[in-house]
Length: 306
Image 1 (spheres, helix red, strand yellow):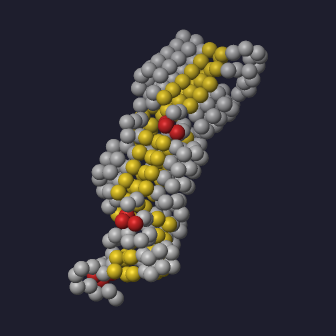
Image 2 (tube, rainbow, N blue to C red; image 1 turned 180 degrees about the horizontal axis):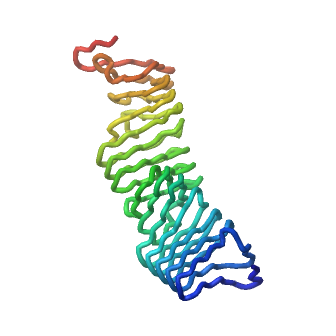
Image 3 (cartoon, rainbow, N blue to C red; image 1 turned 90 degrees about the vertical axis):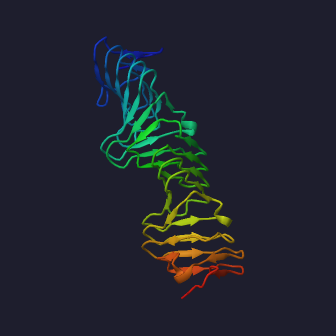
């Protein structure tokens, strides 16, 4: 099907239409697919589509391309399966939802959540579902919506990102770059994969955790733990983990988890505080002060440091 020159539209009827272009016909020179009136089900092509639900409560699937999806009037649902590309969503009027599948879905989001216009909620569905930022420096603020359900991870992607979670329990990963991560209300988990950079953590209210993985992780902390605000615990997870200490980082509780885990000093004069019985050093296999004049410092009480 070839629309030729001009702005060409495939327009549905006034009824409840099912328009499925996922397996053909091939569309050339078609600028828009419009469901028309009615509660329509529209499935786009594998390319980059512009799909308009128009009136009614529509169900729209963009496909694998980078699509522009507009719900129009009514309570619309945008279906996502797998990694559906970088789509631009505009729900229009009504209560509009992005709905994941039973698979592991990736919903890409842009700086300022600019590709989520008039979207009231995102439900990842079953599977391990991720909201993924771009390769640039993104600001992803979910504190005022949309509401998130069944989202296993908010991932900033590459770049120096600022991520602000919801009022619920969030799992946030800054990814590569020096990120600012704010959990907000709820019991939040900040995930660390490998050496992801020097991140600024603020857990907000609730019981908040910095969580490593089964791989070899590096969790960097600054003098006075200034980059760990309202963090109640650090868990290295499985794998060979490194906790980096800069200067006098305060009295920390370390739990390396499985693997060969290390507390690593710097080229400066570092102070690593330890408690009676070395109780704050759980599953730590080594301490390396690095360059500088480094000290293991006990408490003000009667300590046994063995």
